[in-house]
Length: 298
Length: 185
Image 1 (cartoon, rainbow over the protein chains, first blue to last red):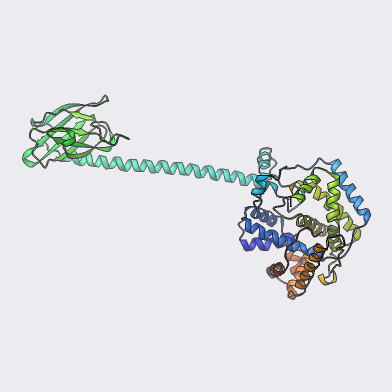
Image 2 (image 1 turned 45 degrees about the vertical axis):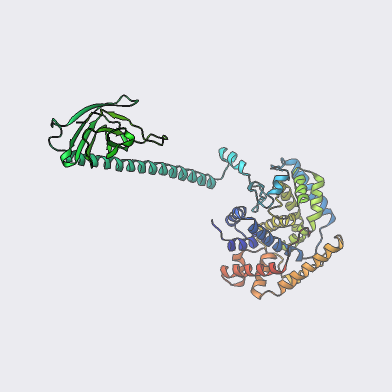
């Protein structure tokens, strides 16, 4: 039960008057423990002031014999009953430090003489089956909800990752499909098309690549098989010296080891060398030439 | 605050001297509250004994951060008395505050404390006397009669909501003028 500040203040007065129902009393105590220090002070003040009306009741003094009878009665209880379970504490530095804080384990029971258990006791009581059915049901519901929410969160995250991966792969598939579609019909059988073997540095990949350059049309095509699959793009470089000074003529992806790349040359590549640069090396900061295609160009 | 906590720890441990000290401090207050509400002197004396048994039973859970000792004793006493009234299904000896002003014996208190108590009681009396009729009736029935909101509503022929808000307003008014004080027993 969520109680507003105004409701708590109203209930504090009725609590001091003994007018709260058991349910209300339980809700009030729980809210009191959760309240901030200033609200707790206010509630304490209300109760102090209400009970102060006790000073105004009839004048009467107990008989002297009542003292002896009462002390005897309490002593009898002490002898018959085990001492009440004490939650001992020492009012030391920590307690003084948190003096304005309330510990659930230190609360006295408003609704009756029976002691409210401490937090630690709740676990023991729950394990021993000595917690009321209402609390047991509440705990089970809470556990079920927690497990359900955790399962839902894991499932949702997993689905999101799958969808993201699927979208990414579908995009690469579509690019490959479109690229292969663009290849000239005679690409595979054209004697001008160079087929070169290549290997991937530091791996066992042994692939083949076909490169066709149509200088007159300032374009070309690259198709390769047995390329390491990666979600990051490869780059096809052409130049006359080293990869560092070569020009990127195509950026492409590999899917299941296959790639097809339309090339826009933008320069005369007669006598040029070509390199396929792999995806950026993790943590390297520079790109690593994974593929060393044969440098002989037509 | 620490002394009260130490006292209650000793009571919880079964220290008979501590129980006697607790009785000497609060017996008068508990008895007056019981005598106010319960039908007979015998009922009031039985109630005193039962309340002190309950105080011993729950002494280990007294928390000075939750309430002062006097408030704690009075809360437990009131709850016991209200339970008893409802169990006994008897009408409390309820009339009104102005017929019950007590001339309390402050002779055992230090002069300064006694003066403070006297002034405080006087302010409270004036405040209660100045309450609007409905609020005064509700407060009297709630405090002196140990009645529930429903019972008060039936007696005054008012809806529970009206009774509840009248009580709330009355307590708010009393609070404005009645500073809290500890160790009043």
